[in-house]
Length: 190
Image (cartoon, rainbow, N blue to C red):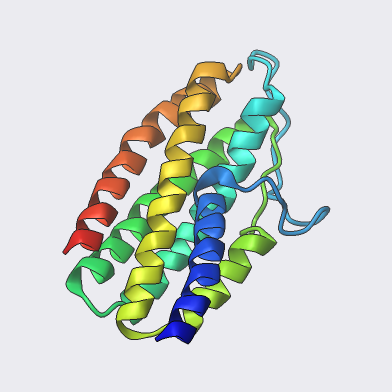
């Protein structure tokens, strides 16, 4: 039991850090050069895209990819209907969000990664090793922490971003993230 607690704390911390990255909190890149989606040249009428906008697009793209993978993992490994259905919700909603994000980034000429960050990939590997109720607990902790951070960063984008297109995208993502957080918290309590 003591050994389990000793291992659970670092795993939970790593899961939380990566989940935060998974939902927009990571500023790292999967690969410095090739890890981006090709983009169209920005239109002449597009409003300027600030570093804040670019960072939010990049981090949210990596978050979407990480959440899609995490959702699939929960569908496959979850032991409760709440975890498996939350996983399905993440796959569906983050796939839709990602399609909007990549279209917006392409239209604005912003390159976005095509893979989760290295930290997010590490978290996925750690979660993959879990099983049973401990998997459910660690997965929910990671997803809740990530969604809390993503909500805060999305609110920052809405308040401080420069591009109306990116700010509008963030405003459309915020209620989805809030719905996810509520569902994940309910699953954790159940």
